[in-house]
Length: 400
Image (cartoon, rainbow, N blue to C red; front, side):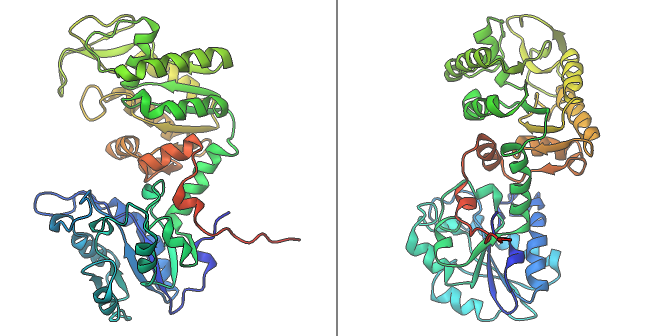
């Protein structure tokens, strides 16, 4: 068990919190989705309620070690100020004498500051020890609440823990709690739904799930790579050439291990990749000139029946082109079914496109947990230790 923010006396302390404010901005640098800022509020509010001064740090975009004005965290600071109803100081940089001067004005009226984009320095992604030490000089206690970045060994995630007492924020703690349910002690039957485009992105996950999950349900574009290996014609469907040997390896190992991997029995196909394009349903080969866009109704019914037997459901990757009608039906129908099981079943939605689909269908509040991290959730489910979690202090074991 890792220490959490609750394990520290925060009164009068400067709490340095790594958050994920990597929010989308439009051309006028207005935030188009503030969910990541909203997700950080419980940890920030708790620190303030305990009498702490809060110093936040995050990256935004890929400035590649250079100061890029369009990637400043200023819009995030302004939005945070609106959300908490307090003045938020936006610092000019993330380390250095000037930043120390800027932080001196933290008080009851302005108890929160945001350091400038960490990736304006090339040393952040290099996990540079000296850069981490300078970051640590800004605070007394370090809290990681950025699950979406915790699979990266970066200075603000991993190296900084060598210089400050450290623990997890509420968001990170919740992610750890739910993913541990899938990795360490899953309830059974444990059923996973895997979609998305690339087999190569999920190879480690699938091989890991063969030893952990009871059933794996495959959908999305990655299914067509498997079809190629299985001898099913895929027409003009998207598939991954370099994923073919991996798909072959997975199918061979599944046979040896007697793993229950299920594939779509029918599919929705079209000749055009666009909204409301003419479509049809096929159960066998896909004709030339046509491409797979979604799982079909027989597959939906079959998968729903399988999922109804689950005690734990983990979903990573959509079943089709969920952003376009009518190719959203498969993902929507299964997601509505999974949502209806929540309460009797633990339902975990992996980050990235799967979380986006849950939001698109307004079902995120109906799941046990929707992860904030795409790559991080994938690596956690693979059983890969996350540097940002491993580096945090362990709770002391209490001996009876």
